[in-house]
Length: 98
Image (cartoon, rainbow, N blue to C red; front, side):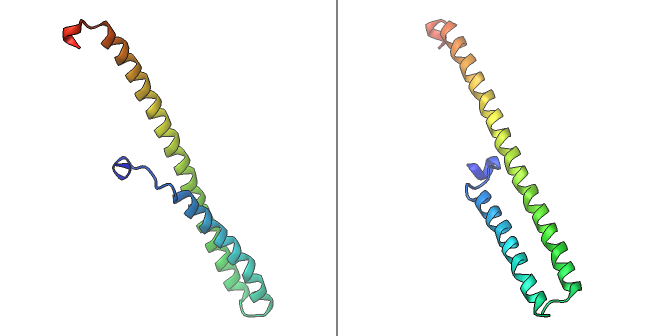
């Protein structure tokens, strides 16, 4: 049902955060390789740009997750309001029409 409605998996946020942390860890390891002359300045810049692009995409994904959650909450609020109104109308109907 959740897939049909487009809801996210509960662990999706955790996966995105884990990936962001992995990028941070990788970025922390590379300077040691650079200091040991195993990574060139050009490679470092390419890697840095790649990390920034990945971070930007992942942070955008987190923002979209938050927006989706807000949409679900507002949809649920609207549904509850309609259900409340239906209850009022239902009580005003004659017994045979209920």
